[in-house]
Length: 241
Ligand SMILES: [Fe+2]
Ligand SMILES: [Fe+2]
Image (cartoon, rainbow, N blue to C red; front, side):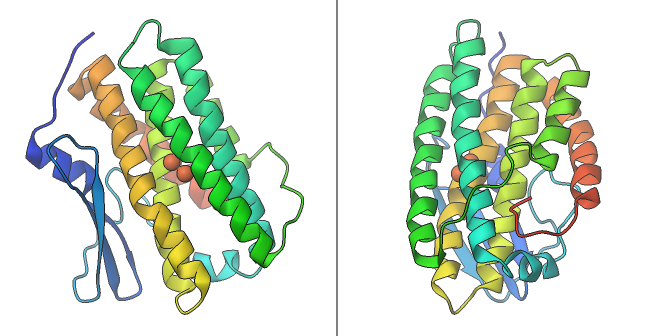
């Protein structure tokens, strides 16, 4: 196992700039040298083209208008996403933490946070109406899972695919927060942005720790191109992805 500690500039780059939405830019930056805390700053003046570290396709902001047409469905899908994220973290512990002990504390924290996110979504559902969750076979997640399987189901691909899902979720929350400004949903979606950006960075960091920085980033770039093709082919629905 190799270990690569990130220097301050790399940490900043990982958190980098989350997304542009309308005239606003969200900056998510590491808050301390341990790469644990993040802070979110919304800047109404700057514009930066890079939507999120490592994503190679930027969602059109008009996507959020479509997604918000059916808020109960959007929340139901969001809840499933948080539940799946919890299950993924728990499954990584079961399957891989024996060989890569560094994963266990990170995945435990992740599972706890994703579970808390699910509770937040469930609370919001009481406000906007709770409907049956969508089919658990989600096209976006399924396509990425297929990519991981085609690559042999390696831990490297699993960590990196998970990092891209977190990044895409983060990007979508920014767009949803902007599109719902003026309603209680804006603050609700804003509350997820920093956490999902941190989760993205954590997965990338774990891939680097377990497989080396160079191998992880080369594979991440390849998977990001594939993820971009997948996400562009999805129909626009009231879903997070
Ligand atoms: Fe989450
Ligand atoms: Fe997350």
